[in-house]
Image (cartoon, rainbow, N blue to C red; front, side, top):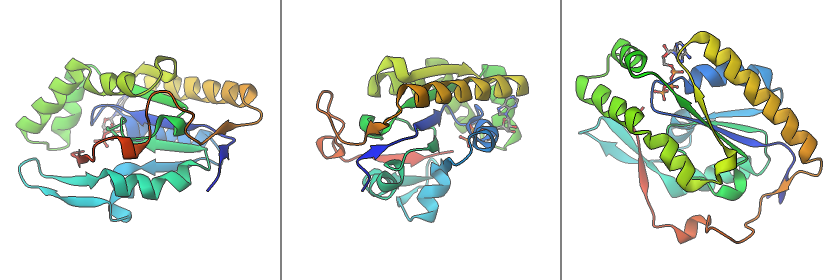
Length: 203
Ligand SMILES: Nc1ncnc2c1ncn2[C@@H]1O[C@H](COP(=O)(O)OP(=O)(O)OP(=O)(O)O)[C@@H](O)[C@H]1O
């Protein structure tokens, strides 16, 4: 497996409905040569589910299997990862965490338009109000690689993508020899050190 990557791995995360996929649609067109991973689809396509939660009507993702499958791909760098869960990836493989935020009334309209039942809408609205996804990112990665961007309007998508493109260019200039994929000590990010957890893929 690659020991160094010469292009950054970017996570685009946020509460379901905040605009991850819409943002990544534009971003992957602008970032040539990047691989895009919508983790909900990736988990399905690679049989990384460990069951189904009837109550929440969502699949349970097997984190270990997901990471075992994804790591060799992330080691190549130039990845865009789209998932509402962001705290499962080894820090050593992540270069930028974009946390999209959305005004609650807009998020309600989006989730309602999708036909989500009220309890699922309320659960996601509460998570957005509490900033759960942002907190997961801040707890899991160095603060300087976590960026919070508002995603209320179509114009926001355009300007957010422009900011990520500018960041990517700067990253390439600052890392002409790439960065290591290997664990360098410090905060433990070796998945073996963390208790096994399964994640709800309750998109
Ligand atoms: N910045 C935005 N401005 C206007 N509409 C938006 C914006 N972002 C997303 N939307 C709309 O909200 C809906 C949900 O967007 P999207 O699927 O990108 O969210 P998501 O975060 O990927 O959701 P999920 O995690 O459930 O896949 C879509 O109808 C999309 O057009």
